[in-house]
Image 1: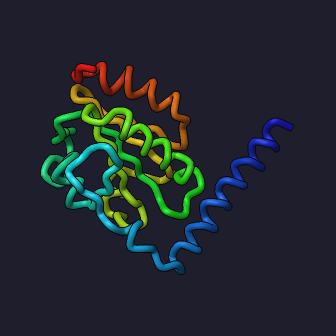
Image 2 (image 1 turned 90 degrees about the vertical axis):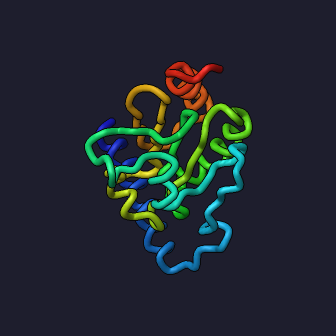
Length: 166
């Protein structure tokens, strides 16, 4: 019975995300969602293009076999899509965290529909996928939505404890 319920839940999530993907291709994406935000502050999530990702986060074209982070603070990269329900649940949490951790971490967003080459480079097959990048050591990827308390725990214990004073 447990396996049946798990299968039903998994099927529901798969269908919900796939239906939204088909609809998103037919919709005109608003200017607000496609606008790349780079206002020089870190009090709001910043939407990145592939070019900006290569400049601000990691140039995987120059260094395909070695992780070299280009930022001066720890970061979170949210690989998302506008049609994804769980992504929509994570978005306001990331906005709150950007304000709460202003000046201490960067929060970036990458639209997987708009930046497919970038998504492919990181093997994004499930969204949201969240890349947590400490100043020292290797980044860690989490797939799926997490709540604000889990984000805070990861930020405090993984991002800020690995080379960034609080």
